[in-house]
Length: 207
Image (cartoon, rainbow, N blue to C red):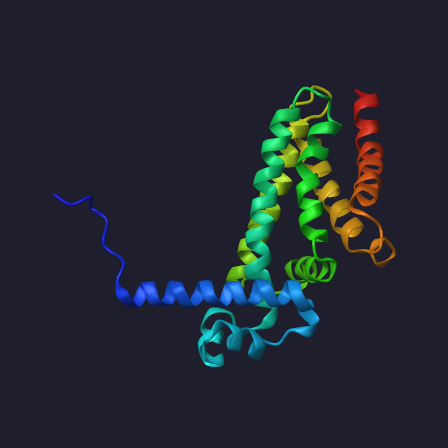
């Protein structure tokens, strides 16, 4: 008897191959030139697909960027969650910093692309599928922070959820603000660390 899995048809394989070529082309061009200086026509040409075919996978350049950045962001969140679990037991602050470090580095890997990605997630249409996937990832990050904070005996569940939203807002502003564009990742992380410490300290002291 078979395994029960239906074999992937030739048409579906061709669609997957085209999507991968489009993703690869977009990823390379965004890194080489930045999202503002890349056109959908350039992506289609490098992916060796018609522009109409590209629009079947992503109807705008913003959606192409979100497709690419979602993969990177997902990997960063996974890496951060693993690092945070290893840091549990080091107080309230250290596990949170371990979680957000790869996320900050991901957003700042190419600052123009990272800023545009976060802006599109916040201000774009939340019903668009790629944005939905990106917002789900930010939800995973926020839930991860909440989970870490609730392990601390001094922070209740309701406060932890609120603090997690505050911390994600700190990350967003600190990684996209124009005045911080030319700072190193470590300098930005140090500033974020100070802000989170100041945010958490009153809750711990009050307890």
